[in-house]
Amino acid sequence: MTGLHLNNIEQLHFLWIVLPLIAVYIYGRLRRKKALEDFIESGLLHKVPVSATASFRHKKMILLVIAVILLVFAMTRPAWNLRSEHVERKGRDVVFLLDVSKSMLAEDLVPNRLERAKLAIMDCVDRLQGDRVALVAFAGTAAVKCPLTLDYGFFRLILTTISTESIERGGTMIGDALRKVLREVLDDQEKEFRDIILITDGEDQESFPVEAAKQAGEKGVRIIAIGLGDETEGKRIPITTEDGEKKFLTYQGREIWTKLDADTLRKMVQETPGGKYLNVATGTIDLGKVYLDLVASAAKKDLESETIQRYEEKFQIFLGIAFILLCVEMVMRAAGQRAKT
Image (cartoon, rainbow, N blue to C red):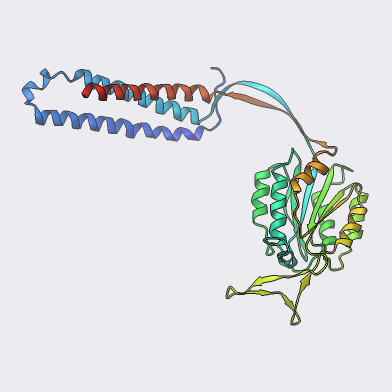
């Protein structure tokens, strides 16, 4: 067993469990001896054949202690046989550009546009195939919430925290958000293999989104736009007051109605190579399927290529021996109980 390596060495702290086990065993042994002394005259105690029973208990205790030690050792994930392994990762860079403006609270999708968008993104992440992902939230300004990463767990954690409070400034500036993605998230070295999945209701406040999309197209970045919301009548924007009462957002005393601006989104995707607009409106979307159809099937670049040193984990051996010893201890215990009866 050369080159022993413990992947989780801090688990050795659980070896302290052995001491209470031994202490309980010694205490029980002393109690039994004391009980016998109280029951039998001291001069006759050595004539009572209890040595076999004591030896039997002693063997059981040794089995239990060894089994516990082996279980703890298995928890450290022991490994040996160091081997070299060449790992290559291929994928695309996918940036989710998520609208978190107040209009995304409209309830023409259940429970609202923003929560439906987050659920769709979560479903998409569950089907990722080695692509790096990033998350940028925007309203009146934009903020990079998660840079490009292969750590999908971290991405999911950040996504769950996203709300309309994630961006302090109100409004909707799609163009500014796109330019931030191009400037701070995506590099200029690769002219392809990059996608921006824009999820919004399309309402924009003169941030020139079509011009920003054209800049993305010139850099070889593809935009896949997901349009959410009612395109005809629109919906009011619900808000909750400090008293917990539900009202609707107003401007200069009039309720605000928000509609899906599909025309702007269609113009944006036309400016990028292979751009695609998906009009969800008030229906449903399987963003995971969209990913498989449009992203996973597209050309991928080499993201990582390295040779790593990896030990073969052998915790199963110690786990198996511990299980056998515990089974033997249980059989001995059952045999001891039958012998008493």
